[in-house]
Image (tube, rainbow, N blue to C red):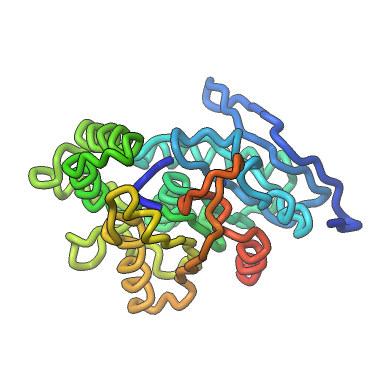
Amino acid sequence: MFKSLAIFLCLTVSSVFGNDTRSFDSNSKKLQYEQFNLVDKPIALLILFNGGNGDPRRIDEETKINEVATQMNLQCIGVPQGEWVITDSVYNNIKQYVTHLNIKYKISEGKLFMGGFSLGGFTTLRYTEKAVEHSDSLYIPKAVFTIDPPVDFEDLYNYCTRELERKCANNPAGIQEANWIKNKLEVDLGKPDSSISKYISASVYSKSDTTGGNVKYLKNIPILSFHELDLMWSVEKCRDIRDGNISSVSPMINTLQQSGNKNAKIILTQNKGYRADGTRHPHSWSIADPNLVLNWMMKFYQ
């Protein structure tokens, strides 16, 4: 997909699938999250972030990751997060969830995995960068996965500009979304030509920075990023290969590989992208096979 924002039986496990909204009080405010499963004596915490506005309540409709997590004794939780700029305040808010969930589910500190779709993938990566930057060892994920995330906000802004200039009659929704994203970036960061330092600072990775920007904080983090290329699906919407998030993720992974992170990888899928309602869409939770994701992650469990 494109720069869109838009998710057995084990004798030691008891499971509950589906939405189960929980809440807790922290610093005089109520924080909510989705409990996607319930396991007996979980060995680790798996936090998922959704795309779009960051509402986690529909994740379990779009992926079976929670079911596979149950088989592997992973407590699976959906945390709401719709901010684009991951400030220290947003970062600390996510940390509050990790602290509370570790205590509630009796999970050893540091046994943390994360993943997300679209903006949720961006959140996963940018949160991890913050944790490494702040040397918060107990809050650094063991491994992360992402599903077609935007990682370079300058690149995202340029895509939106192209989308608006094309005025594609076949893609009114894309035009509307691009207009909203572009306005959002301008409000939060300004325009790239006059505020490039803000764009570099807010992005996971930046082509405009010779070192890749914040990506240096991911050099020791196992990362698996899923993408599905369907060029004719794109062409029908007047888009080309430049418009996919992979156009930024690919050089990001290359930068990490060259820095020595051989556990930073891309998986390309074919005809896996479908929404829960059956709509064909290469930018979907479904392109990440749950068994593949979690079996890969558990290689880094220590």
